[in-house]
Length: 422
Image 1 (cartoon, rainbow, N blue to C red):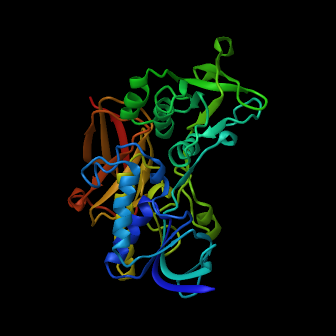
Image 2: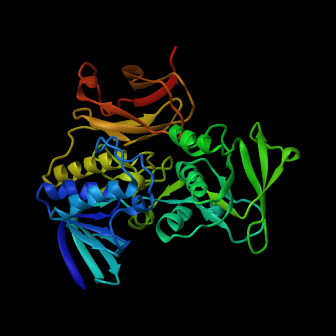
Image 3: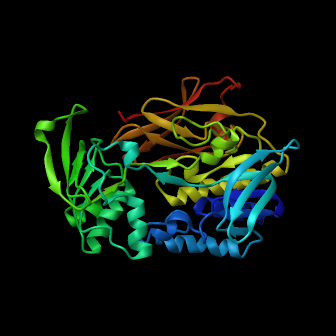
């Protein structure tokens, strides 16, 4: 069994993992990057559409192009890369170090003994079992991400007549992609009264191709024995299905774009506290989890809408790892919670003496909104937003200047709220 003694182990070789690993390694700390697939890049490799990199690189890239930029960074660094390797176990040693075991066809069993760990495993798709659509169990039901991989990487077309459940970004992009390969997308069905994906994807992927979007509707039944033959679609009225208005669409394929779940089996195995609002780890102002020396960033922490934000957050996690390895910790932290019309805030603790970004998801749609940061009920920061919706994440910058004229204690109540601009 091969043993690696290192300062930092980064688990996951997608956008978050590469960003964190490159940052820590550049500071001179020994770093290993483990990826279960055979090459770095993660889900970016199957996202051949553009729209990536506008924040990170100030230009528009496809997913593979974005991944390639980071792969070059890793290849030019001192990071030790282990592809085709899956970390299955993590345990805590008495001296505070972590012992992680990875399994690989190429390397066999690998043992990493490390001072710090960065969790960057990304997320996975919800499937039919998660949303419990009634009906038979025929072939032809795929998650949208799987269909994307089949088309873009394997060269297979999943079906010719398609209905998509959920208006998440992957589903919207696959609506356009299926049209491009010659299939017909008959409908996108969304349970919410508003779209779940980015506004630009609604415009470019549905409106440009005249694909119907049924808001406040559900797929209420699947028909077919060997293969999907049709689906029933039922409108919701006041949140209740009105079966009298159910209509049927003939199709051979059903793609599910019904949300993402942070990949936290390893987190659960080692006993990391999870946030019930995000399904990711609970982290402090350093993006450190409830276990000392274990950090988290990217979609495994909370599902992002832009990969640029994933890279930025993971870079911050890497910078915090460096500070931790140097023995530096915040002198004080404040707990921050979601207030009115905010679903969650991440991280859940902030350092009032340092500049940082917090990310949040709104609960409502508004075309004239105001984000407010309050300390003990007093507004200390306002930010206007011309449009907010639950599918689009909001970033708010926190600076020490905000707190300089306020008396704060460890028990100070900090929250973020959203309301319509008067």
